[in-house]
Length: 398
Image 1 (cartoon, helix red, strand yellow):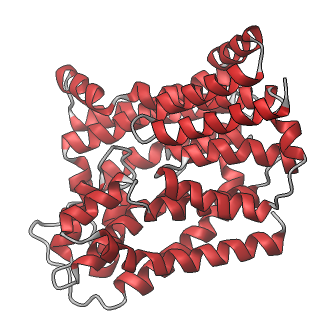
Image 2: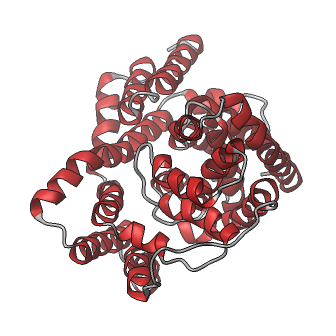
């Protein structure tokens, strides 16, 4: 097959991936893999790459785990336990404005910014509405960088063939930096004290917090003490335990659970895992890796600049990671933990800026601000973070 035809197929698959992902991330990944394989592989080989993704035990376990995660969020939201957690955080006003969107952001659900926006609106009385909109988006997503059960992080780390706990220390540095930037640009001028309408309840604070933290805790402990176990099995056990506990403490009946199930669409999250592995396997089996190896592109440009632009263009984290990680592996070898952290953070920065990202559009609408005014608030910290990320990549040569 001629290199020109291979490149045409590659770019068509990326175009489909980027365009269709705005409507359905799951469908876009499968379509992208199918188109790429049609242009670059014999039919039997293409079928085998899809089949091997479907029957891989580690992929199946991870798909089930990721499918359970939105159900945990749905149960906590439906039962009111997440509200209990937020209402019983006895912290200062600035801390509340930062951590309430961050905690609600741990629930992976479409349009989740509308859950945290009322908290920011009520607590941030007197703040400019543009700053409240920027604050809501910025802090709502910062925990995506380190939360071990964040689907985008799980999926991306799986593609890079890394362990999440070797990556977290590097991502934690970016989290701290993001919080510092968020404080300087959004919280520094906040004045006043928190006013609580209800008495403090330790039980209402600890119950949902336990549900949220039990999954990553079990995941870590099982991997630590049972190293011979398929590592995705540890994740599944942790997530399943968290979901079971959420249902029990929330007293969710079968009828309510089915409603949550239909609303959360866990199959979409699970199929994204399988689709991304199919795309990755098709990519590796094609002749694209050899052609990319001949290109002149630095790790910094690929991870930081391309990562940021794809995050902004797609309003997603998984799609850019699906594109960049296999290219990096082909061109530079296995991706290190620092390189992954820099890439993930760069994608994240584009993701929190773009109007394609529903949380951006919904926050702007809720607070009644124009997108240009929203961008005036968020671009400065994002630009500083982008420059630092690029400088680190150049210094470390990753």
